[in-house]
Length: 252
Image (cartoon, rainbow, N blue to C red; front, side, top):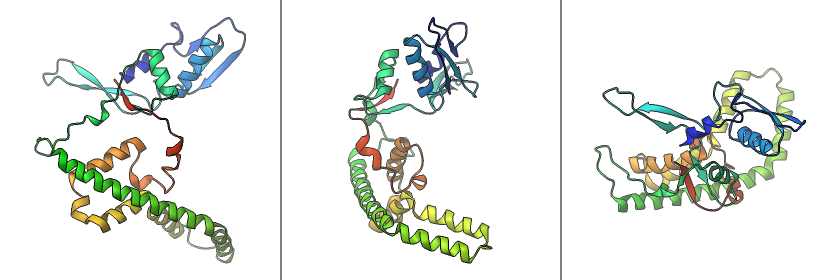
């Protein structure tokens, strides 16, 4: 349960403070995952540590919230993760090591997900596999086109910057509001989501890419991104080569 991170106490008398015999003192800003892990490491090295947190809770983006599970209102509830529930790659991943040290169990059964339609009936696995393959084809094509656009942009960046500067000098009284609208539209047009939708629409048509299964596969990928496709730039997946190997697991 991810909320177990909330109960980590660095010191019984003061959950945000550690007192050791070491004269060296360290202040850690933020009681999120990184801050707590840092404070814990320093504690083990016998430092005096003070953790400062602006929120009224610890955990940062890693937190959960209880929801009622008893319709009779008997007070029964369960905790639902609202962030930081999945570790992407467990090999040499410090987050995985921290979970092991703290005794927090994980599960790699993320693919064993029963999909239900709007009527509550299980989705045909063959139909799901078919949609997944088509989705991945569109995704690969979007990656290739995004890479080509990035190379082209890199080649033209210097010339474009000079033109922008010259235009600002020639038109110092230009309408700022219109400029912001143009920049916002340009950012949207250059989003990975816009590119992906453009390719998917051309390959499969509007009806298919608006189907529940297609939307599910897009939402499933957005989960690992932490945002919608429209908020992703062309370079959002460039760090994949530097990710951690191993299974993707959920905290239990």
